[in-house]
Image (cartoon, rainbow, N blue to C red):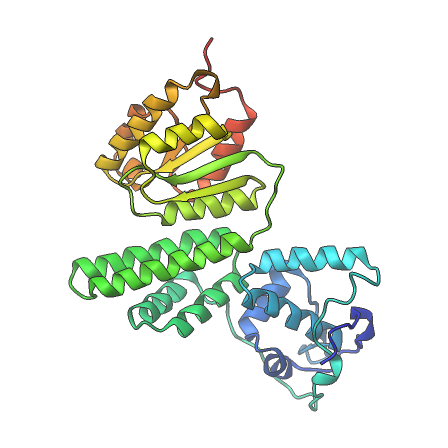
Length: 337
């Protein structure tokens, strides 16, 4: 296969119906329609009968985007990357499409109505839940890949991962799944989130944020999602993981002086640990960083927010980004007068 082909080397003549493109690329009709509608990277020609017709250039772009998504990149990131490459428009940047037009066989153009609809999150949630409780990693991977192909990283993070964990937890409480199944599902999703974080472009010049879970806290999906969104927003994010020990943590804060600390707590016990961190940070004087916090317990019991000397970052990991932006742009809310 020729891996050094410029996009301009492909024919722009519309030849292929959607069935041929699906067979050539492995991208479903609903995903193709979503990419066309949301990002406009492929704009198929319409025949006189109204059917979509795609060129060799279109197929090359679709195949390249699918390759990026299959490697863990969100479709929005893949589109942005391709736009940057196409804007560069030089010999170095133009050789990125690993798909030669000759690998597409041109079938006779046939009439094909495409009525496929984009699948919604409840459907994806159900399929991912069922795959995980069957230990079916291949099917779980396929559902997540489809979700990222159709929706933004933030939408998938909020509307797929947490609801699936909640549903599996509820089934465990009802005795419908085993603790082993619950552990497998949780660790699978954590591994996927971690891989996505590591695959997200790093900004080495942004403010440094430390994100983790308060001492004793083992539920880390919310903290992982916050890390992902903040990294996508341009921050340097150092993820500290579960159960961050208070004394050692405060000593490291004094030594490294991050711009902001973000900790998650989901129970009354871990809220106590969060209070302890806040009190100890107050003793650091000039090195006292901003402290942000969140977690399920603060949504269930809003009165607990007043007991933490810090910044409540909202009811979801997605809310966290706006609150952090606001906090770091404004004056330190706990600075000495």
